[in-house]
Image (cartoon, rainbow, N blue to C red):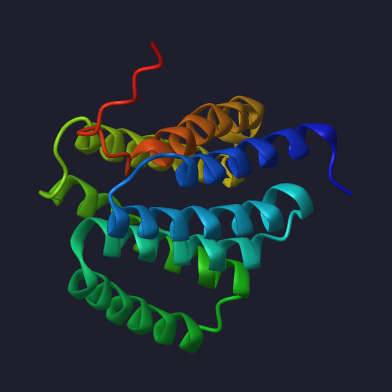
Length: 192
């Protein structure tokens, strides 16, 4: 059963998803962002609320695939899917358990999307800054996820700190990404 802290964290991610719809945006880019954020909500539903890591990782793989399409186009994403299919075959042959299987696939897909966002040329400031900052914070979050779950004695002693850092990076990353498709060229209407 989810505790209050988990519900609050999940609610924040849902609000970021809603914000992605509330923001006046460039249509195609916004649709890819919204789809990625939808899968982020699904991932957090499984992982944050109920501790089901495997379905959460599957959803996060979809998130990173959508970000690859968003930042680098369908051809880049298709190449990623080819690499993921090869990696899946290797992991299947090695009889990796489901958690390790999807962890490796997620790490590969995230590496591709973080590379893509830094190569992306279609964004002008401030969108370029928002996409890169949001994805960098997302990466720092995932580094802390890895450190929190690492079976290294020194890190185990500091797992509470890495868990705290995970959320310090993750929540702002989702908020920043929720604004990253905003059309900043349109001025807000004047009230007075």
